[in-house]
Image 1: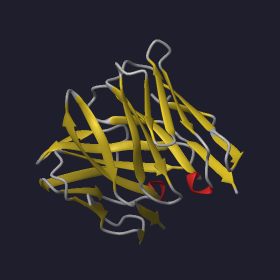
Image 2: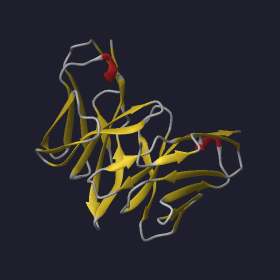
Image 3: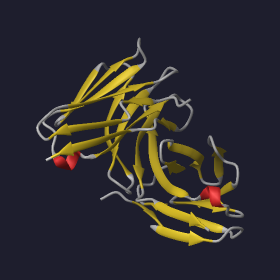
Length: 110
Length: 115
């Protein structure tokens, strides 16, 4: 199975609500990254959190990392219709390449 | 503005054809990657390269080869295309520093259909 597993697979919320996505992984990491993909396009990097960090913010994004539980969460506050996309976590395990999960599809209803 | 470009957005090929997918980055990155993306399976790494002429197999290299003759260009080759290689192909590049990989920059993707 994948190194990174996102949960839930799909999420539908109303504009203005918060969206939370979770990522679990299996092996120790150097860092964990979150990416967004709009339909049919390439991925865009959102945020990187290192293994010695517990929380990081970027605008309306908040990422937490719990290395003891091997899990991370991405919170998008005050969501907008433009946040509709798929969100992927990716882990750097020192393997020379990131390992991506299968993603969470977020639908924000206007 | 940093950029990763891919040679085609859409490509239709016939079974048995040799297919070349080209990727170019302008960020002087050492590392370049090829992924394929299929519904429900996320991104799966095909090959990556950490230097010119250097390459390493990813998780699903069978049926693919790669070439990196120049730092900015990384090519994915399907020696004899098959219908199960119909997919979205994504190229990415990244730097490396501080003992870990930095963010990856992705191209727009090539949607390949093999008939």
